[in-house]
Length: 132
Length: 170
Image 1: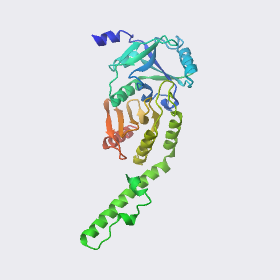
Image 2 (image 1 turned 90 degrees about the vertical axis):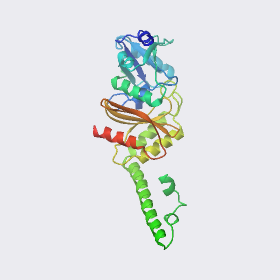
Image 3 (image 1 turned 120 degrees about the horizontal axis):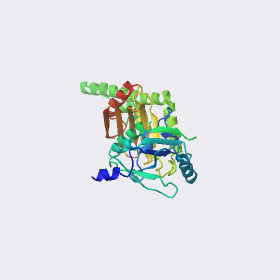
Image 4 (image 1 turned 180 degrees about the horizontal axis):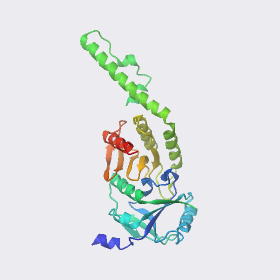
């Protein structure tokens, strides 16, 4: 029941966007490493929810974060919400001032090697888009 | 351990080999000679890897250079510690020469990563931090393997096995 309740926070059809600010997280073939999906500092992963990232001005949110954080935005990794939910993780909306679509991926295991395994699965399902 | 012994100028070959003419002493001497040669060979492999694959050491330096400040990921990532860098170098030195050099990365919790990637379904990622515990996760088709191992300079057998399997998928 609890997991059903948590699943209701996000539609299976939604896309979860992870902005990439670190160059070495992108492989030379244009895919994204699991490193980009390791939860830290709390055991949650920051993402942005979107039904249609191209149509919803997702890059504007990324650029806004870039200007605030003083790190270069290299691109974004899109992963279908159902891929994350199927791993037993939760997606909880957590709007912040500069990103009303911000959400946290929670429910991660405590052991680091288990987190890595889930991060590999997310990375395998993610599609990278270089910043325009 | 190997590099500590052989890299220490105060320990010469003569100080390692025992002197004696009795049968046990000769046997000990022969065995010690064999061990010394094995150690030397192992050390040479480390040197050869560094000479033959400078790019992975360069990549390590480049990644580290980008991870010196807190928040290098645009969020709250921890800087990579000296201990983590030394452990990663030690791991690279210990890799058998026949193994393809990995891609170097970093995780926001301050771990360096070494990744062998064949496809989204065949890959191995290892996390190396300041402590002597390394973490790995591997995907080989439908089979998944993950865990942690102690690392004191010798690569655990399970990781060698997984590396061999990932390489076979290339």
